[in-house]
Length: 248
Image 1 (tube, rainbow, N blue to C red):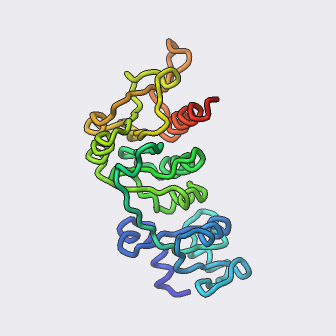
Image 2 (cartoon, helix red, strand yellow):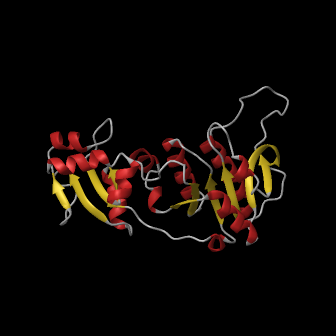
Image 3 (cartoon, helix red, strand yellow):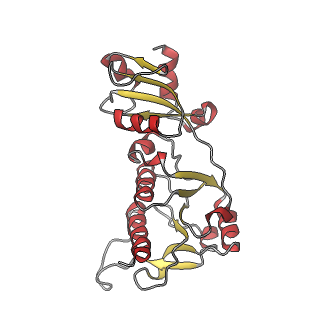
């Protein structure tokens, strides 16, 4: 293990370096094992002796692993993984259920949403360009491996949604003036837009929404919190869409 390799791993906490190098950091024996079984390409694995074998594996001491790990409690393995590249057009999403994130900037929220998408069988998430980077080490860890099965795309969100609507896709978004999620009509496919943690869905993106929905508080006349956490709200909305599909 060289000083340059340690510096590279540290530098990959920064989005610019990830973009320039085309690499992200994954940590933990379980996650790296899943990556090895996936289509993603691993450039290098640093691990304690006996965990992995292969040409790309370099065994290091526990002391060296402390220097490499980006976690508070050092893991037993760190990998440099090539960032996958996906191409996507709006028309390819027709009849699929898709998530769109409008300036969701908290890495923990993004990681949780990717994990939720994986749980509910949603294979594509569309993000505005100013959303958190899905290959941020904190996001990668929060996905618990879901980043291997969910494709995350960064686009100019407003024109993308306009194109999707032109192809007949329903665009859903959560608004205080929306229709009750549990009583309104929901299509089996469509794009569900979730907004920024503080501001919600932006004005421009909001104009693209064709179906405004509301997660109702209970009881309706009781004083309550101003809003739900975006990841929590995403889980509720996705669960209701899938419940309708399964006709439960």
